[in-house]
Each structure stands twice: as structure tokens, then as C-alpha cells.
Image 1: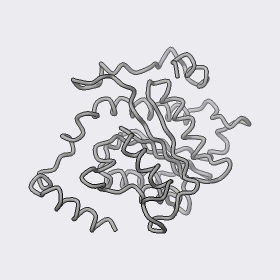
Image 2: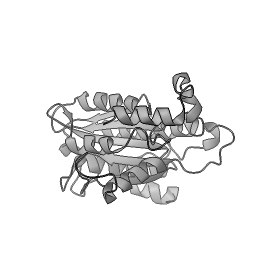
Image 3: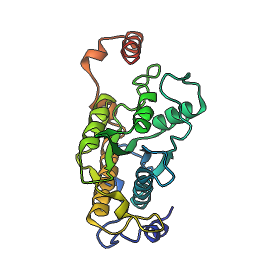
Length: 242
């Protein structure tokens, strides 16, 4: 998607104050400057899911900033441990998590917590897949949508999950209160301070992804794991994640 096409698709953005991010300003050397690969996950199966709509707005912003995005649709994903990891939806999710260099997580708040739909997606992403950790060292942005007043319960929980998944969770975050008021009849987000905050978060995510990719293995390397063999490490991680 060209920047011209992208700006036409995000009319709320002021192009005089934002533009595609130059990787040369943030990326390490060597870096081929390819578009950051960002996976978006959302946490509701409703027909008019506001977490999905927010993820779509985030994807449009990411495109404008120069990123490549993919979004996982959780419909049809079985409950964790309900079936084997060979299920097509599980394979799709795991392949996307390996493809991504960064992620955006968007969940509604339900009963003061993230939804089961969202948590199931994270539970299907293993801490270790053979000798590979699918999420270790990758960047993460967290957002939540609320049916009522503003809350930060979910973004706080998502940060805990990101830490557990050994991800680099960026400082900025977004929580949108009374989200149903923030969208028009075409299911597009209206101009607001909440929309601008999502732009802030996506801009920061792209910058952090450029800065850390190619370096993340060294950034999150652990001495305690270097003294273990790959077989010992995989056996320990897999035994504690079930």
C-alpha cells in the first residue's frame, strides 16, 4: 500500500505532522530496511467487534507508517488443549507469530479482565517450539476497548502476558472508553484524542521494532540459559507450560 493510498484511508490523520518512518533513523546495521512485520490479535467474535475495528484502524495507521500487517481471525480457534496443535487454526496462529517482528494486542474488558477469546490465542502460542521461542524479543503494543468508563485492567494484564512471553512491550498504550461512541455508521473511528493516542502507539511500535529487530536475540539473552543445552532448555520450558 503506497503512502498516498494509506493517507486517503486514514482521513483523521494530519499528514503535516506524521509520515512514513525512515528506518535509517532507528534500525541497526546491517538492516535491509524491509517493512516491519506486525501481527494484530483481537479479542471478540461479535459481528461488530470493537476490538476488531480498533485493530483495523491500527493496521491502516501501520500501513501508512511503512509496516506490513497481518491480522489473525480467532473464529474457529479451539480452546487450549481441546485438540492437538495440528489444528489448522492453531498452525495458522503459530506460523503468524513466527512471521511477525512485532504484535498489536487488542482486547475488550469483560468482568474486569481480558476476554477468554483473547487469552485462548495467547495460550496456543508456545513459549518454546523446538529450540525456537516464537515471541521472544519481539515488540508488543497493548490496547483495550471498554463498553463503559475508562479502565486499564486489560492493558495491565496484557503487559504481564507480554513479559511472560519474553516480549519487548513498548511504554505507550491505549484504552478507549465507551468505544461504541467512537465509531461512525461506516464502522470507522471518529476524530478524537483516543484516535490520536492509537496513532501515538503505532508510531512508537514501528520505531521500537526497527530499533530491536536483528538485535533482540542479544537483548534478551540469558546467562542461565546459555549454560543449559538446547535439549535441557526445551524440556524444562515444555514441562512448565502445560
